[in-house]
Image 1 (cartoon, helix red, strand yellow):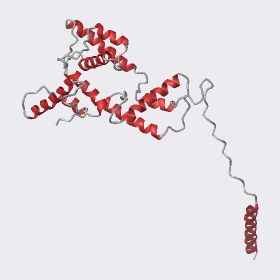
Image 2: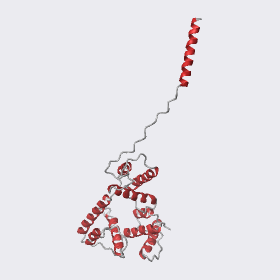
Image 3: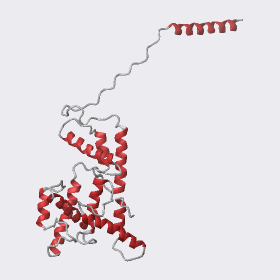
Image 4: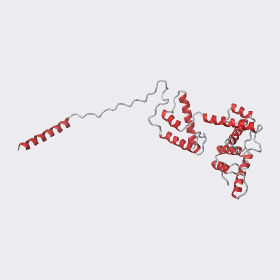
Length: 276
């Protein structure tokens, strides 16, 4: 009997405790303190170089495209009118503009996170490497000029400076544009340096293969294809040259002698050249 009454008392006590808990006022859920805004030193204008909590997915998608471009081409200098992906060229230009604003202490989207990612893949904000490339090739041309009785006609395959032939062809094309009053990438200083070496800018009958190829590249940038008409009024020689490449390609397949090398075929294919 005694043990039973003890158990009943215990049960009653437990029930009273539960009832008491139920009648107690409920505590509101804990209030989280608001997140402090990122600290920006007073020397910065508002939103310059601010830490970004999340980099937008759209920005990261373009960044991944740039990484793939670098894997393929070995650099991050995407042309402004990059046909396979025009948005990427425009995006790269925007990054340079945002960096310039940041350096000038103006409002900019160039956050620390974005800057670190771009630096990781060696993104060029200023074009210092391009300047170095130009100066290195110019020095090679000065040496070639001295060794070859003042000539600037660099052969196709020049082992002492493998990139010189293509570079000289590009400078000739830029000089020609300058003479015609068109937009050119050459600065007045560079024009003076090239003319000082007697680099010809006139279109001669003996135009090199690479010079014609660069003219074709320019044609494609303007027209979106390589279909130069045979009687192309703006540049009749280019129309004939394009036709000749097709003839040379046909000879190659017929097993006849041709001056169309594998390198030249690869360059033309890379430009989207149609052989028929």
